[in-house]
Length: 112
Length: 107
Image (cartoon, rainbow over all chains, first blue to last red; front, side):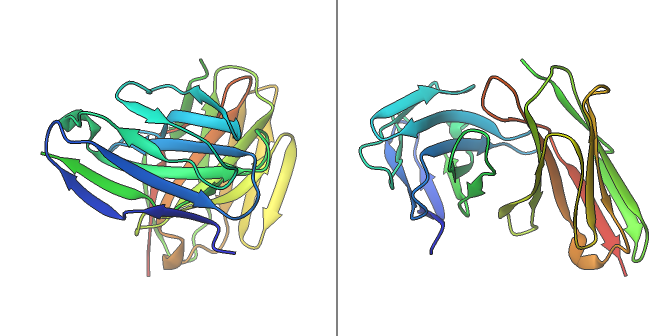
């Protein structure tokens, strides 16, 4: 099993550009999450999904969108990138809400 | 919203020392997680517990539900234990994370 995979690993965007961060898991987990990690801060939840077709906002959803058309994939879309979105983004999955979460390797995004 | 506080923020230890990292939270929870973030950035789950104590190798995690407090202990610390250790709590909302404790173990 590959676990949770994320692409790309690194990306530099210009202000106003858009991009999609890809996340996939092969563990047949129902729950998937997107977090951002800023220096010196704890992980913050952006969006999460409890199953295909179901998504919900987390603590910091502004400027992002998600979709969950399959169990395996949970892409995160950034529209009109802003410097405040410079961060490391982690995708994670779990079998259910109370189970341990498995994390992807992260995507380091810089917006200039 | 649950507030999660970890202490200390930074910790430097000599190889072989016994290490304790603390986590306190403000609202009742159903489970508490301890995670490890390697210097390269990867995050792995160490423990998930809702009561008592769990042990895995040289790592021990305890939780006191009444006092809303958990500790992570590392026995016989080694330089490879150098990492950021993160506490996260699960209540009625998705996980809320602490800011982490940065541990450096010196040979």
